[in-house]
Image (cartoon, rainbow, N blue to C red; front, side):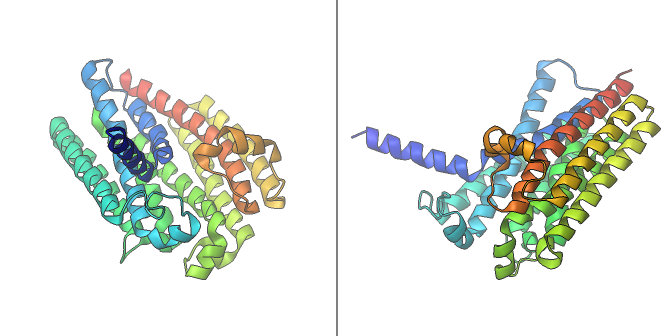
Length: 333
């Protein structure tokens, strides 16, 4: 008989973890790591390793997990139709249990951010705590009424860009040093990159968005024009990145970024011309390699976006980390 309560407890625990959507946690880790690298101030001590650990916990399981849990809670009726196997619509968690889930995570995140902010002290502590709290607020109003920012692409994309691409850089930098001006620029570039990817991610739900009144860019201007807008933002990001690398004195990095831009343009043209078959050489990576992390889709435009995302994210991350390392070395010296 004791095995039955134990099994029920394990099932509940699994459902609570699933509600926090662990796959999404990794999306903030590259910016956090690059922000720390660019500070040039982290030391190989137990103290700094613990700070780094808590940084990843706050923005991964707590921060991102909180936003995912809130999203499931307020999207229950939609999930009953679109994703009935999720923890709440499947009955594995009640609405009350789901509310406890994101409520407890929120309290832990706020307390941890406050404690670390006090530990850091000064302006850096304020920046660190304010960044995390801003992310939590945005994560809540993104899904919760009456604002529900996700209903309109002109609010939802910037909200994601700030949460995932900008404040992560600021927090990671502030954790170990004064804010580096180069880090602010990297955060801005990541903001716009996130905006462009969110715009294309809406391809998967174009039909449902149109029926429910969601104002995604695809619904308003169509798939092909949405591709053009998103690709235009991405190309602008790479162009500004190359200019910044040159202005910072990183000439080799500038050439790497320019080469990356040319390759990205090649993929963009291929996908724009034929969303169904363009960049098909990356389909295997989507199906078997990164599918569990970035998702899969039967919608041609969204599937094309996933193929592009694998390539784009890889080359952009490489350039980010090279830039962060060079910036860190500059301040280390």
